Image (cartoon, rainbow, N blue to C red):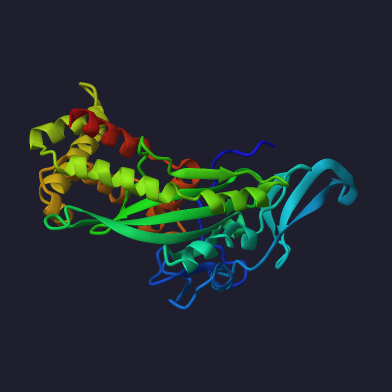
Length: 346
């Protein structure tokens, strides 16, 4: 099986791991997903975070055996399953000879140098779907658009994630959050990369060491995003221009379309206009292209229609979608398209 370039977390499930009987989640200040897990400010190393997040277990490759009429047979050549060493549970992997697990401890140890240098802090850590995906996030210094005026703060996080199901590489993704409304600005920026990837091979650990030495993409991405956000903030945008943006992003139903489709389109348009012209979250940036982008982002994060699994609340499911969007494809087509249109028109 060829690894994908991205984590394949499952947004329809997306459940915080509870294999040990406790939620596999750590948060530095407050529960960021589900309201579960250990909340403390005491963890200073990745090893301490892994322990608090219930991630101090390893993955083993075990041979797969054939079965006939209820009896185990011979080993299946070049096929292995991936299993947790603490519980013995299968973590979804069907892998070949060359696939090598990147253990939880090894995946995140190199972050200690960044945290120890005072550049970042450990923010969250946890596991999803029985341990198929594990993650740790760090928080970098924030930046503020128009500090003496709008004072619109953007908090910067880097999400490090690793999979144990054989389907994807280990990744790091830049995750800027607009502080006033916690909009997830998972935006591509032309001038800087926001993702790096490491495949599960025998050279993975040396690749992680290389990542430690070259992990400067956080600062480059932050600088590029700040410059772009500032440029959008400095450009005014009218209600009529915003209406044209909506019409470009969401095609209106054809003449004679079903009433429910027309009603849904009008409801979305009204909600977007409210976010742009009236919502408290835009007070400090009202009437700008930056506000237009934030209205689209806020709508996508909190108001677009989603089908919620029975086991989750709507907000839990939206949080899962935000997480798995980052882990799955590291981009959001709607947000990126809105950003591109606003930049071109500026």
